[in-house]
Image 1 (cartoon, rainbow, N blue to C red):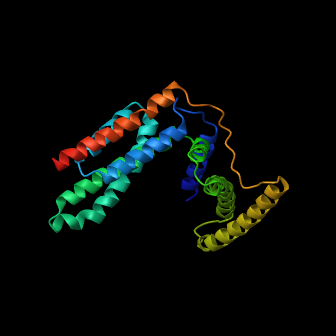
Image 2: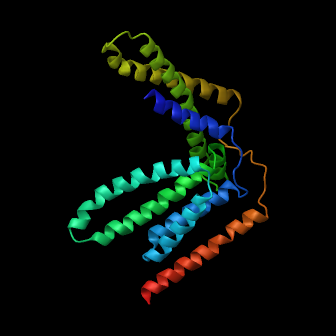
Image 3: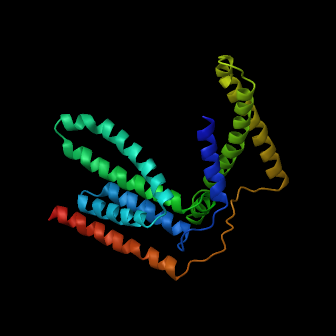
Length: 243
């Protein structure tokens, strides 16, 4: 439990120290990613979905080995769970349903996993703000991650203290999970109250400001020009089904 918790915290802290890994604005990349997922969900032609998967796999091939491994570890379990849930459809005479859903799930998870590897967290929240998402939603999302880091460190320190004070094969430390959760909950209440008071002292008016000063350049608009091409290809493949 401690190891998994520290891995999550380390990934968030590592993302804070990173810089942008792409020349394209995160807001444009996020918008195109959502558009791809939406079009693939609406597509009735497997050609469109396979083409998007092929492009994403080609993009994945140019990433670092560690990033590729992380994407694979994210995608494979979700595909296995999806296949397990849809396995009865195969025995009921609908094997194509399994293949269709698996392809669309693979495409969606692959896009999001690659986006997660190439866009750091602070850029992601800024992208939501640039896309005019509700400010309360963006602020809550950002603060939730920050509190998870703080509370994760706090609970990990408590668990380490319990482990260091346990001698031999005792079972009393297993019964302290409720105490750790309760103490962490009380800590979260105190932190939230202190944060609210600090925001009030700083005259916070509910506006989540963006600190990204970079404007869209030629590379950004060239990337955004792929949207009409993507939509045109979607319409073409759907017309093949009608014809």
